[in-house]
Image (cartoon, rainbow, N blue to C red; front, side, top):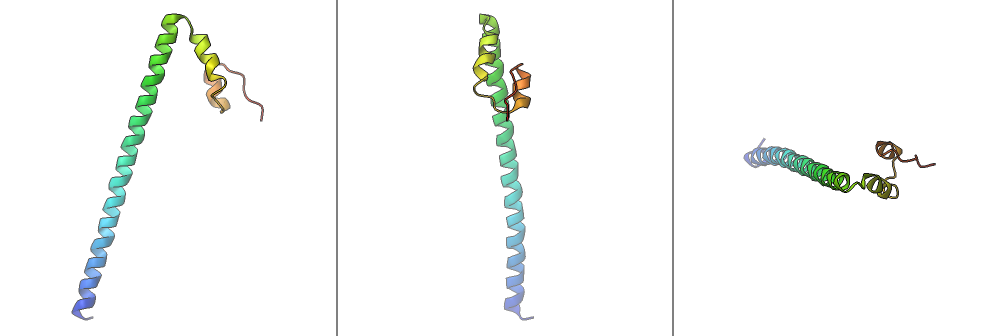
Length: 85
């Protein structure tokens, strides 16, 4: 193998290694953002549940979810009737 081919092989290997590192870092960033998004949703939900409980309108809040929730497993959490498929 000549010197140029050897250098090319080394560079290709480094490129591959960098690509793998980039993919790992991108996956980690996406994972962190999903966790933050989930946490925000939990906090927003907790806020609205607390407010509705204080105001005595928790049932009203759950009824508002009736038009929003599409999955029967989600609807069950709020004692809503399952949707017929």
